[in-house]
Every structure is written in structure tokens, then in C-alpha cells.
Length: 166
Image 1 (tube, rainbow, N blue to C red):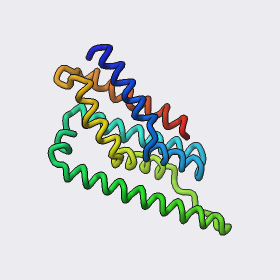
Image 2: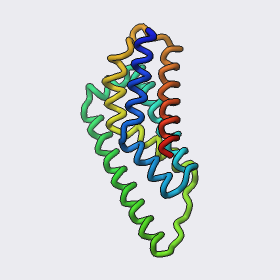
Image 3: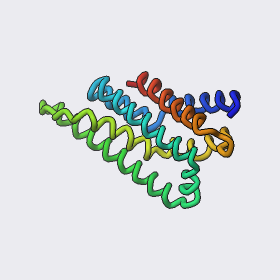
Image 4: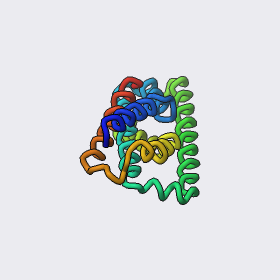
């Protein structure tokens, strides 16, 4: 992998991570309703989920999703349904608090796994890694260490970006 290709990949990853989407809204919503720790854990889950997507893209498994469009369609609708579920749950939680009822504090791991599920079900992330990554990086000549470096950059950029949003 050339330095130019690596820097272009880093720039694209940073741009994609900073672009508003379900991940950003999840982190901000967790921060507003539950505080920094829960928001940061959701961001950590998002970073882990994106690292999984990048690993799949580097392994070429994303080609399967491109070949079988119905898999992507199912993921897309499942992600949309999950986001609607989260919105309804947050709306109910807000109305319960306004009535003076105390909402029980969920376990911290719930925020982390929420982040992972948002990242894995995010159509923007799936499309990005499926289309842009293979165009920018020559997967046929990429070494294992270079692949790990790309995954580490994705994880690090997501941690920083989601940490800022938290």
C-alpha cells in the first residue's frame, strides 16, 4: 500500500466518521439522556462495529452482500426498524421522566452493544466499506500488517469522532 493510498483512505475514513448519521445521533442521544460514559461506550461499540465491517471488506466478504442484494436489503430494513424502536423507547422514557417516574439505569454494556448494532446495521457504513475501501486500496497486494493498520485507523478515528460527539 502506498503512502498516498493510505492517506487518502485515512481522509475518507475521517470524513465518513464525521458525517452525521445514525451513529452520531445514537452517541448524542445517549450523552443527553444518560451522560458521557454511556455515550462514550456507545461510541466504542460503533468503533468496534466499523472495525468488523472494515475487516469484512478487506477479506472480500462484502462482495457476498453485493452479490446477494437481498441480504443488504434485510440489513437495511432491520437497521431502520431498530432505529425506530430506539426512537419510540427514548420517547416513552422521556415522557415517563416528565411524569416524575425514575427510569431504571441500564447496564453499561447495553450502550456498547447498542453501538455495535448501530454500526453493523448502518447502511452508510456498509456502503462505504463495500464500495470505497476496495477502490482505494489494492486488496490483492495488501499485507496482513497493512490490513491491521487500516482497521486500527478506522477504530481510532471512530473513537476520536464519537468521543467528540459524546
